[in-house]
Image 1: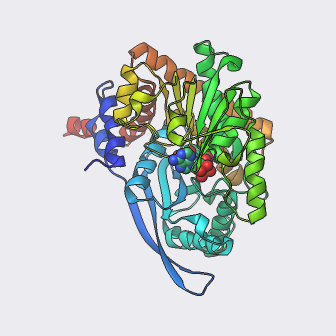
Image 2: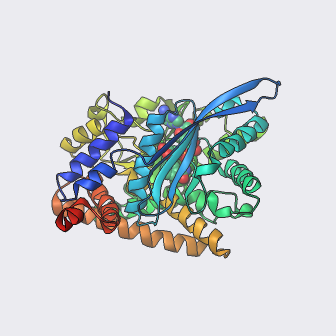
Image 3: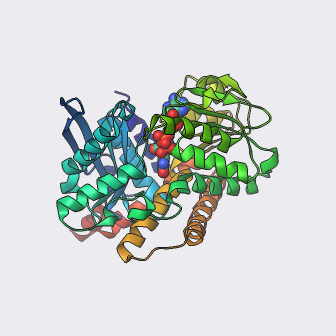
Length: 429
Ligand code: NAD
């Protein structure tokens, strides 16, 4: 059966064609180390009981404690969470962080819950997985439809279970509860650092470069805001309800303010208003946004947005993946033959986990950094890894994704082989 995970694994097959690695590595990265499926009973506001299904998958911990977000979404499945945990393993290695990869999720439409129900669910999820997480074991963080407030509840629940304050158990917490300055914007900021490196090498001048962005959420908004400040022209934005388009360029902050104002009126944690309620601009569909004639198409929503079905319709000159897995492997092949480079997720969105790592370091040291220090350290890592990956892709004439995977897998392979590989044992017997 063609699952998201089997598609994700085809990327590994590609890299084994380019680098010589022990078969042990192939075996180790073929399935997760631990998959936990839990039922979370929640007392709803009307007195009724609802049982939600949740997952936590720890894919590989060879390089350190596992790290990965928690997603609250109706489409969450074990297949999706497993794939995301695999990508986290590669991503942490690409960024050179001392972490393995994990991911979690709950099948729920959080917009249908009251804030109190959402808090009970967040705390219930942590009670259900408490035995397998911890600052030295597995460290959750926010993902789609979870945020700093939810991380604060989750951390607090863990402290109550463990009877001690262990802020390093969860990252992406509110700043007043031990979160790091710069974490909220980190994924978008990191993605912009990568795009800036790419622009430098390909003579893209920000003021002459148009961007269409799918997914105006946490990561997408921060990227759009910072890219606009850097001079890029954001001509289209979308969320789950639709898209807006203006060739002259959109005012990113004005659109976000509109969404936030509407949210505050409804006193909800989530935004019910949509970008397409902005009346000053042309409304288009999400499909139309993906097919716009722009310099850069940025994907910051969900996986499988560009597939064999629409890859031939893409007109953008380059694609930047902020979301995890938005371009599937069939689309990758089509885009490659059409000469459209894809700046891959495992590099582009690694700014989020990198500042999560900084948060974990600060929590464990009990000493907190200024914003400048966070961003300077983030830039050093993003610039270095982007330059390395761009150079490897050019040198070997391979895709940027394959180059990124080679980097990541070689680091994981190094750690695995230092624990002993079959070659070592075969030569000893
Ligand atoms: P989010 O929930 O804040 O935002 C997701 C946005 O996508 C929302 O605005 C939603 O309306 C929109 N959306 C959903 N379906 C859509 C569709 N079909 N078309 C257009 N828009 C759609 O989530 P986020 O944290 O910004 O995460 C977005 C992606 O980035 C995910 O793939 C996530 O795994 C990845 N990511 C996020 C971070 C982070 O730090 N937030 C880090 C690394 C990777």
